[in-house]
Image 1 (spheres, one colour):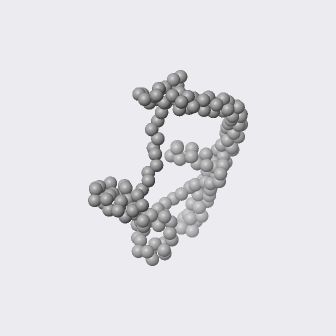
Image 2 (tube, rainbow, N blue to C red):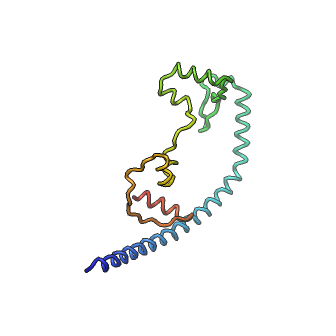
Image 3 (cartoon, rainbow, N blue to C red):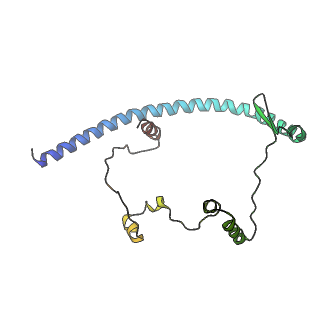
Length: 177
């Protein structure tokens, strides 16, 4: 055989395998759509029932919080208790961090008091190249910026062109891989 006859034969085999993959994917998509429809029906039925019960829950919660607010002395030690599976009591809130107006002085204090690792955590740099975003630029743009791309080789792919319905199928495929 010559090279001319081998290339079309190989391409025909690739086309045939792609057809098999597409057919198998269509079967999974149909099943995924059926599952989505069934889940939507169940979710709708239970959501309606949950909404009917929500009012009673919210009223009971509001009344319980009002009682805790009225009697904070009952929750000095311990601050919380678990009663019938409900955690009741007082919880220290996070509060709001208010920075001084002179932030330059604050930056100087941080630089003098903390280690380099802590400084990196406490202070934000204003301009830093974002590697992922830069990787999305064209090769010409990267070259103009002086950025080198290494290990950019071609790798074989065989993926289904994705739409909204296929997301579940693709998740299952990723889990199986």
